[in-house]
Length: 151
Image 1 (tube, rainbow, N blue to C red):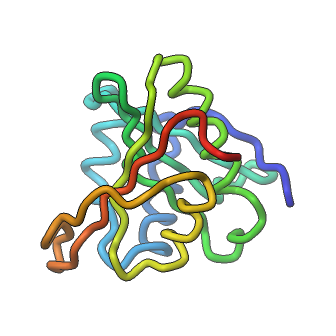
Image 2: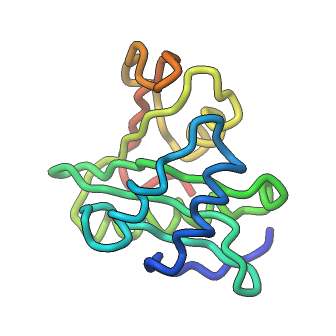
């Protein structure tokens, strides 16, 4: 397991985050959305993982009452399976605890077996199915976990 440097994202990270989105997702988040969040237009917290000053992954966490909402997590393909996503999730677990959250939830593509297995290893369980959640019409699975996560 490599240890990445974790830090909060700043507006200057926009280009790196957009590149990660394009490398990781068939339907990436819009640059305008990420830019607005990074420039203070949103309530979500962005955390980046870097190796030698190169941003290799990031995650987005929001809060809804006593629940933390994992809105996005992405790691460049060449850095996957090195513990980067696990580090981001561990940091989010700490942040959610500081926010006094009791659980964390997320949406994941029904077809994304790799991500579903990763989340299951952290204690996430199936809660419900959201029909047509994604822009391409694919369903999302709503997963939830009690905090702290099983790290």
